[in-house]
Image (cartoon, rainbow, N blue to C red; front, top):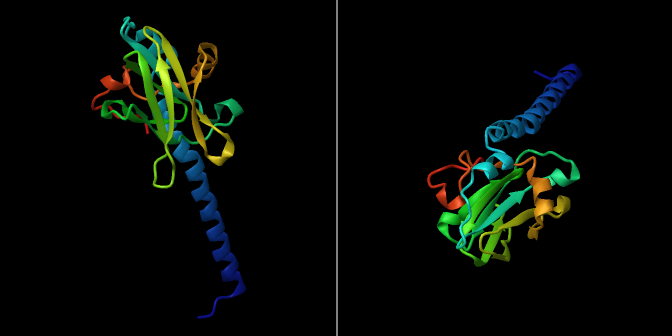
Length: 185
């Protein structure tokens, strides 16, 4: 049976519209499902009001990823692996638009980020965490080329970015106390 021009046009339209529907589901569906879970997580303000008081022998590091928030762009959530001092209890994945915090001994600590996969290199930053103070570490997107970096930020800059971010975990606890808990991504 030979296909007519009408049959070929019909098949072309079916393929075209199936592609549009698939693209729509990918762009809307994949972004909205994690965002729905994310909306159940505590905000920075809720977390800050309930986190443990710092003692003189502990410093706190807040690690946050505003993603493309600075450019006013909202994308489907992405995730990146985070390590502190390469300790198992201080490893997690962190989604764009979220933050975590860790209570650490005062002194120098090595923070590392790496995108999942074989071909991404790990970015490291040595940070001095002072006793009884909060240090803010930002995961930065260096444009659309998917290069990520870490930088220590001021309290004012961090608070401005953290205003719209959610905690990576349901319970607003330090990273080392999240035993058995699952991050959003």
